Image (cartoon, rainbow, N blue to C red; front, side, top):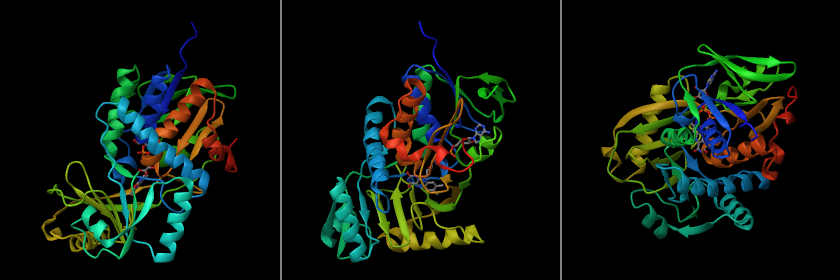
Length: 358
Ligand SMILES: Cc1cc2nc3c(=O)[nH]c(=O)nc-3n(C[C@H](O)[C@H](O)[C@H](O)COP(=O)(O)OP(=O)(O)OC[C@H]3O[C@@H](n4cnc5c(N)ncnc54)[C@H](O)[C@@H]3O)c2cc1C
């Protein structure tokens, strides 16, 4: 019998969790090494809107839309995945821009339609200041990011994966030009392949083996209310205020879904944003600010995912929009690592497109 491929996944955010789950299901011998706790860093600060929305070239749209479908597949297989397919209500575009977006994305197969103020009010009765016309994207939704990553990891463990937390990777072992393991304080973990899914730390780790991989890491501030009775039903993209309500009842918002710039005084920025949120909702005055987060989005230089082999034995998986993309990237990465088949949807996203990578 052929020996199982030994794969070490570095990072237990949503990307590492999805790759580990798909690898374990594909029959690999999987170890996840995590510097802190399961659930990630960017993942824990994410707005977690699942979408294939505006502003993307067509191949990227198709990758995102495929990943929405892969979330649905995963929900059928992984116990306790916290997803809600509520649809997304887009209120923040000028007429011409909205129509151009609708036309293009509808032609690509996105389930998106114009709606009037009355229908928008039926969908979101507590949102004030609804415009005469809006767009509704029916196939969009939301995830609870940390719980989703943990559900994937727990199920990966049920399929034989090992999860090692609080044990940062500090170096790599190599034999000739091939990586053979990852070194932590507790051990050297032998591997046939190492997957770097370490979010904004990916560049620093890749540099340890001479791979130059530079990321942008824009910060994004999100406010979280205390849990409150249901006041929002889905994703709402209002001008300067993107908001949703979590499964636990918290209303969360950013100046946009990627989180706004925290500015020089992030407490003051969070306070001002929260006042805007309260004013935007009927009954919003009852909301109480609990805390805010500032997360950094792991963003490859051209804004698109970097997924694939960088050098012999080292596979990179880093992206923004990782909440949307995790299921498809996990599926495709596992397929490439275990069966040596690269999905055509990954064609534009090889890490080798960046100067300095092999
Ligand atoms: C404010 C904000 C809003 C966002 N909104 C959305 C959205 O609406 N929709 C969407 O699709 N995406 C969104 N994103 C992007 C998405 O959240 C990220 O793309 C995704 O979470 C990245 O996941 P990850 O697993 O790559 O990184 P992370 O969650 O950062 O996980 C990486 C893990 O690697 C670990 N690690 C680092 N160094 C080491 C080491 N040396 N050894 C071992 N482990 C290590 C870290 O501790 C961490 O747990 C948002 C992000 C932010 C910050």
